[in-house]
Amino acid sequence: MRKILCLVLVLMLMVSAFGCAETVEPEPEEPEAPEAPVEEPEPEPEAEPERIVIKFAAQADSTPATQAVIDAFNASQDKYTVEWLDMTNDSGAMREQLVTSLKAGSADYDVLSLDVVWAGEFAASGYIEPIDQYMKDAGLKISDFNSGSMASGSYNAKQYVLPFFPDLGLLYFRKDIVSEEDAQKLESGEYTFAELQAMAETYKGQGGTEAGFVYQSALYEGLICNANEFTANFTDVSGGLAAMKAMTDSDATPEDILNYQEGDTHNSFAQGKSVFARNWPYQWGVIKSEGAITTDQVSVAPLPNGGSVGGWLLAMNKNSANKEGAWAFMQFLATAEGQKIMSTKGGYLPGFNACLQDADVVASNELLSMEGFQNALTSTIARPVSDTYAALSDALQQDIHKFLSGSQDLETTAANVEATIKAG
Ligand code: GLC
Image (cartoon, rainbow, N blue to C red; front, side, top):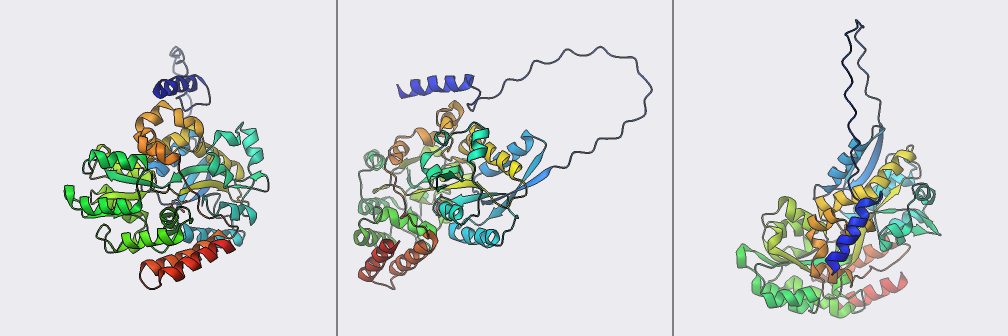
């Protein structure tokens, strides 16, 4: 029934000018009758009009999606060229790089990619331009986009961002290794981290794998996303951290799990080296574009206490010298055409709601209709909210990493973590 409804919606979208549907080619013109040759001087070759360069500061993408969307924008018009300033994948380090530039009033970047956890701070600091008027002129409404993403870039009743891609933490697992019974349990979300650890220990080594479970436990922002999940949104700090430490010390995880970021995780899983991996939707795109395994061997599930909400947003530098061009690119990337490319080429969850029903998106991003993914969507959890999020996160990272590496006890760590969250 859901499929039929989707199909109806898709058909409606295809006839509407706002869907992701292709535009209709104009009728070819009648060929002109050949004219008698006239002696004319050779015309000067027309110089390509100078294009205005729009600089896009965005993190490296392990899938082909970001490059494909930039190429599509550049091919769509002849006024602007987007140049991608490829930045670090470490959210905290990227924030610092951007703050240094924006604080100095620089116009080095026109369009910025911002993590949902610190976008509000950028708006409050006056680094980015409100986009309400641009949206209005383009006929776009807040409700056209992923609501959580839009909310994280709204400040003092003004809107500052459009979604680049919304994220949520997922458990990926090898369905060709895990039993049918365990797969069902995982997809329902009715399991604990202790059970996941036991499964990871059991299946490790099967099907050529070397690790049971991989996730993000290095000293950086990803650690907070994972700790948020282990501690059920910091409601069970002691129990959650104890479970995380047990996982760290167990045979389920690689020796160097405390250095793992997203890249280490997707390399391990997509190369067929691990049975379970915690990562974001883009990992689907990595498996498809460069995996040693195929997506037929993979399923996804909600994490035991829900997956952290993440994602990246597009904003305009307040000091950009090319605001019209910056907006043109933001609009392209965040609406039907751009989001369709992000989802079909990179596995990303579309931030433009109409794309969720687009036939091509649904057909080529299998992740979106999987049961485990649908269940994961209903149980997401946010990270702690703070005006000074970067400082809060840094303090939590230090304490948690110290504990996981064995240089601080559980009691002290839990007390510090609770006090840091309370202080905001
Ligand atoms: C992903 C998420 C982002 C998070 C980061 C942590 O990029 O989208 O919100 O902060 O991972 O590594």
